[in-house]
Length: 220
Image (tube, rainbow, N blue to C red; front, side, top):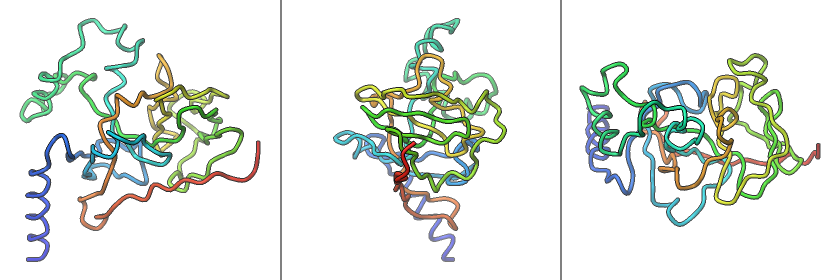
């Protein structure tokens, strides 16, 4: 009875979330392993980022790079879909029809690792260096030894522009993130939908997210 009561509460709570306050999301891929498992259900809150910029370590949901990356948009054979079309395609049964949904309608979830004004590098292992100091990322256990992508997206000494962020998947060997976007590596704040607040399913992992990140004292 307790489990059914909990499920009922969650169903009512999630369905009552207003789109401008919060919304439920599920995790369709392994790009954020091990922190986020495939099919995890989260609540994304949208209020805090309206007045404040995300911080390093925050897990954010944002619009598909296929909707804002200049090179990806330029390669399209048809115009970008509008919000109404994307909303319609997100609903069943439309969402279950293969090939119907436009990539530009998708949402991505990654972690903020570099902030505006910082000088950032990513090495061949997928480790992040900020202003010549490597950051400690306890949430990453799968750094690159082998990667589906060339050289783990390695790059050196780029300055993060104003109002932009570098966002990466925790699964560094298997995440298509800012390292690989052809039009630019950084995410503008206007593309961010919200921040991961807590996980409501599965029940064994129910709880809030801890997003603390530290710097190593060793200068590189």
